[in-house]
Length: 398
Ligand code: C5P
Image (cartoon, rainbow, N blue to C red; front, side, top):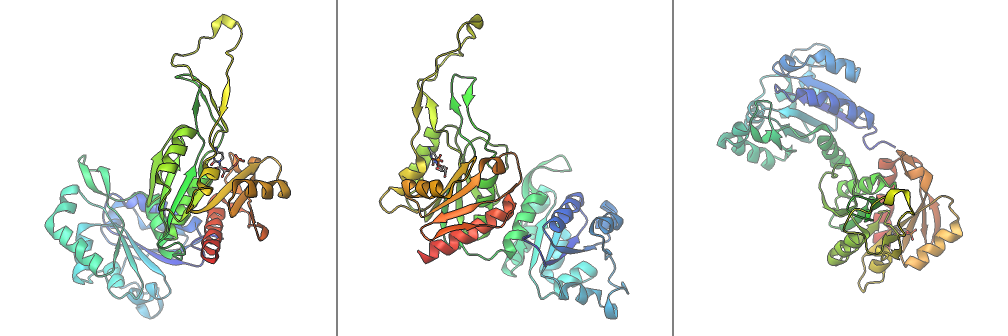
């Protein structure tokens, strides 16, 4: 099930160089199941052609207030009547001024004024324009009027200057749109999540690690944030971007992850241990690079057990509601249930190791005192949303 299935979105573009980002946004919205009608101002059409958006969306693109295609010649009304959300990206300083003052002199501004649905805008402009007092006044006015502002982001701008004003990346805007529609089943909850592998040093250049990508943990963090939770992600080394509206703390080793979690877990309502924590670390890693020793015997490494973070948290007085994972090459329900009881957690999620590593689709099974439940197979994002829904339900029923 896609998060935007059945949703209709009007994507408005105004005249900024960031228009190219909206072509990617359109594709991503469609990938998630949305039906998108694109409306462009005359200036937007100077930056990128309506044909591009028509080809990408497979639907007519609207640029003209006097377009006779929609019923009754009422494009300014009809386009939003069956829609769920208008997203204006990029939104220029000039368009923000028009919105803030209720001006309606072209199709997009008229649609926004005549709408009965929420409006989200992604401002995009030069940093001085963004900081200018009129723009800031308009931004505040729009927030007061209930318009959802996403960004702007900071960084190098098309003009060569650096500062606030860039349009947020398509991925971040997509997350804000999904979040807008997601039921807030975790509103008010503080959720702590571990994710990714850990890296245990052998010497300054060599580590012992595993093949966890961190994707499942990151997808759960994103889904929990979109469900309204305040989420902190303690992550081992991954190449993934931090999920939107999530606070990430980076660690390398199991001991660092353990120390980090233990120092902050009080005050969290839910703890979800997704990290593939190394079971062992090297006893006394060398401070100098180990020599190959000219082909003589390999180094004699000895291991010590790492602390079990999940079991440690679950055993705390006033422990948060704990969820663990068990990735096994064969899933034996009795063994997984025994592991759940050994760890002392109300919910343990079993998955096949070969189904989580290096793949984007997965299947998981939930183990709890009430038995075993298999969730619908799908992308890690879809499975993460199902997991978050189950956790929210079980947490409130406890
Ligand atoms: O015992 P096993 O490693 O199979 O348990 C997996 C679960 O325990 C996962 O939720 C994992 O994040 C957590 N774990 C942990 N600390 C460890 C080992 C595993 O939190 N040292």
